[in-house]
Amino acid sequence: MHRERVSENVFWFQSEVYAQVTAGVIVGPQWAVVIDTLALPEETMAMREFIEHELGVQVRYVINTHYHADHCWGNCFFPGATVVGHSKCREYLIEEGIPSLEASQKQNQSLRQVKIVPPHETFTSGEMTLRVGKKNLILFPSFGHSNDGISILVEEDRVLFAGDAFMPLPYIVDGDVDDMIASIKKIGRMELENIIQGHGDIILRGEIDAAIKENLNYLNNIKKAVKSVAKRKNAEELIEEISIEECGKSRVYLGGLAETLHRRNLRALLTQFTDS
Image (tube, rainbow, N blue to C red; front, side, top):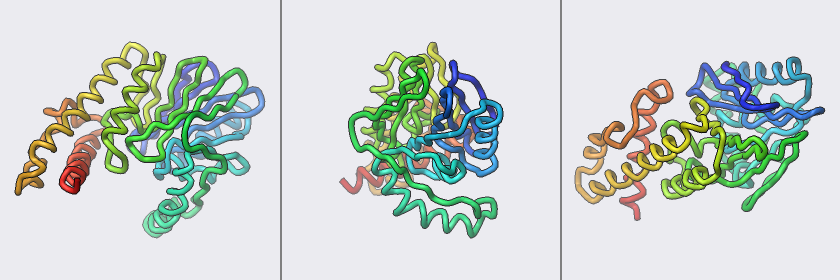
């Protein structure tokens, strides 16, 4: 697991095992806030070990950016912490997360100790704030990757934990492409120092404008490309010819996972356009 200090009392973690998924911690004088929990129990426990023994505080809050397993199945490893998320995150974890975990546990022994812990405190719209020492955290919806997505701004540092609203390759299969475009445009107007992506490396201040432009370009390109073939009889074959490169991205992103995600994006859009 990679670990890096982003700013004073703000740390970033990145999995070395699963899809470069990330998590964070903001440390106060007496307690800490964790943002997302990584994909596997051993990495989540290593993050907790660092917080409790290296930083010397307990975790009081865990914020889930959305309900997907790699971001919130580790909630149970922070007993006593209050879990915070979007109201739909709670709904999805109960309705979909529990049966999904039960199925996964039959295949993966390392997940036997995992239990679903849905958010205890939720919000639906607007903003929610949380004070951690001298840091003010602003939580707000950022849909597109999923319909329960939120991002967290560390206001004083202008550091944004964007969740999967921002990734090296935008992924819209469980969300909506237009919502994703709106979320990325909002992020682009925030005058940030750093963007912590839900997967991938930290985006630094000098890289943000280019990353915003590249992600918006990709989303607009896949919309245009799929729309152009959606009404044709052999549309399913034609979308397989739409390369990730011609849409403005590289297949090497996310350790090579980007190509698979791109294909899924195209199929999801085709389904949307042919059903509408």
